[in-house]
Image (cartoon, rainbow over all chains, first blue to last red; front, side, top):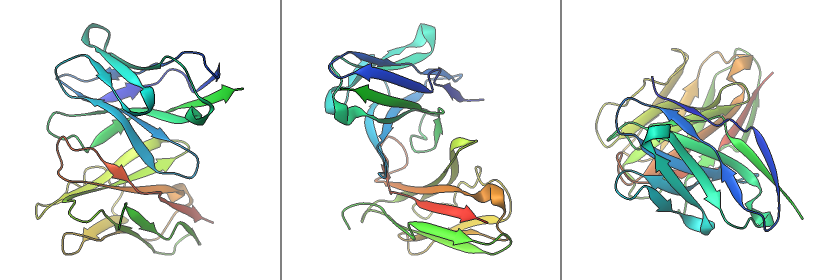
Amino acid sequence: AQSVTQPDIHITVSEGASLELRCNYSYGATPYLFWYVQSPGQGLQLLLKYFSGDTLVQGIKGFEAEFKRSQSSFNLRKPSVHWSDAAEYFCAVAAYNQGGKLIFGQGTELSVKP
Amino acid sequence: GAGVSQSPSNKVTEKGKDVELRCDPISGHTALYWYRQSLGQGLEFLIYFQGNSAPDKSGLPSDRFSAERTGGSVSTLTIQRTQQEDSAVYLCASSLAGSEEKLFFGSGTQLSVL
């Protein structure tokens, strides 16, 4: 069965520091991979997605993620965090050709220290 | 409208009552999804509508849950005989198609069952 693991429930980083949020997935075929962000009181917003091709994908707000098939990982990175990045981040996987039927991880809450 | 609209934003009900949650997708989006976000379960897929095809109901947790989509636009999620474990945020999302298009999420309906 498909599953997504986000090992870190809560992460705190200082503003300006780099960020990496971990995501591991379990899926038997080529997955579609996503990162979504949920800010307080707002709906989920897509940061980036990977379907095929270049394993390093760029997203909005300066985020990027790298697909590593050998490690079944799709970690999210940002070189310099801004206070407005404080939010909850969700990694998700979908079966091929079912890009909207998502299996989500439990989420990682990001706090940013001034 | 500009985004996915859900109503009501908050709903408090008594155990055993029926509730209806409404989702108005982005105009022109043929695919519509319902997800549930709860403390114990994270984000779970519930049901998916794509055009005139039969909906994918594989995520509905019990037969107390049902959904319909009228005229290929507005959708209603109905929960009959609500239970306390139904308390959650119910999120609706829409996309241009069901495969590789990104999902646009509404802000959700917070359901509290007393």
